[in-house]
Length: 419
View 1 (cartoon, rainbow, N blue to C red):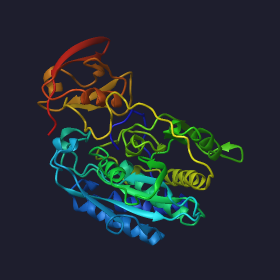
View 2: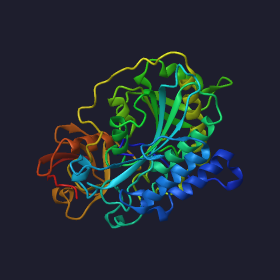
View 3: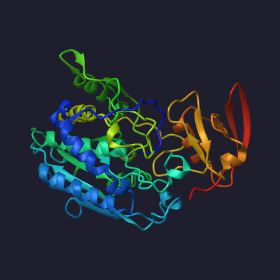
């Protein structure tokens, strides 16, 4: 998942095997494969990413999904050297693959309408660009168990459940690649759909759904169709009791693959259990995933998909203007070189230090500082900070406002270029 708003989270410890539901057992098996050290962090250009794609295609076939790609279950494409993400890395010209399986609808009147259910299966590889570890962690495998082996695993569980249900509309399951570099896989699919005759009814996205805490889950995008709030509220109640502390609100823009579909004017829902201190770090491992919670999220998403697949009428799309600095496909912006403290958001972004030789170090930023503004942009959280850096280029001189103990300082930094 691309950088998003800061959410405080405690460590989650994996349950013992005898407490796992059947769905959680299946999820654990998939997580252990996708987030193993042998997958090399599922970075672009790694054998581990290729192996993960093959694993998912095999799972789609075993579930009974039809091939939905341009090459069997795969939709291969090449990252353009001109892509914004390629400017910050060496990924330009590399080939990656979306993995696509299809569950045909059973109503002749509605099968041309497809519900896309997606999750990205790539991650950061061995760190570097996008990673938030201490500098000496670059080169170490970033397994990305929550980001986003959890969403990919949930995708498989949703597919298993829906394959056993009677659905009027077609369901297209897509495991996207290249999300961490700017939603590359989802943007490619939107521009090059493998089922061009389909009309996309809605898109459901799962990204970081492995850390369910206090039964809280967000469904961002609830405002993208007028029918969504009532539908989500009804499905969240069983026997008069809520299944989750469901936070359902917001438009369809955001730092994950659903934004590509919303930009093409499709209703979207983005399911997310929150950010945590292991986000984009080497510590995002399987032993910290709540697999029972992950299975509960998959159950809920399967029920949402079923309701959408069988409802008789159209959805009423609600447009919203994109944020001033769009998150989609724009990379992480100019380089400052801070190391964020992911454990809290005290009215800004607290940092645990700066990278050696970075613009932040040269400007005098120090561990414990809370960044509250960069240039003309207020920084309330990590999402704001990312947008502020995206608004600048290497070589720009900016004033950075920080809180240090009881004082407010204004430090001047010359931003650098990400390598």
